[in-house]
Image (tube, rainbow, N blue to C red; front, side, top):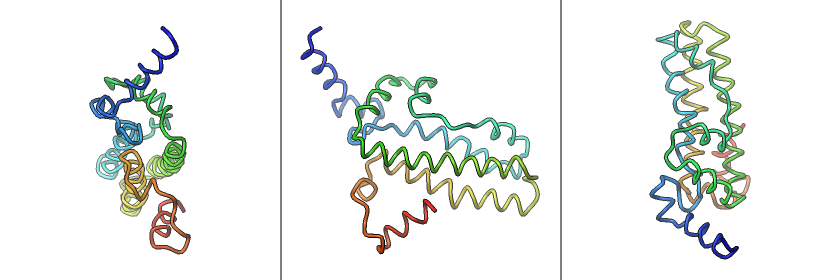
Length: 173
């Protein structure tokens, strides 16, 4: 195959219609399927106070890189998801990666809280639920907004004195 034919095949592979059909955002070239890695554990964390046996499943969670998640998944277009991620705008990937790093850290804190303490204790149960609601879900929403090309998340950051910047700062203390 000639070099020109390879770039045509690559360009064809990343056509917006092909990406959308594969459930990959054509603008960001990211797939929301990756966020299931977090969503599944968040659902379990919400159950832990009432079903403490779920702690074992929660404790098994570990951060997984985007590529590794798709390599190990049953996602039909996993190879395309990985290739599209590497072809994504580096600035979009940097914002996404930073958000995922914050999410990984917050998830580790929540898991530690559930594993190191009695999740059936009303105070601990309240703390777990609050952590999920106030930290994990907003971070997952932020990551989803990046994947789905929410304009305010992909545009240059506002001045540090703005309400939008205050909201971002609140997400990433």
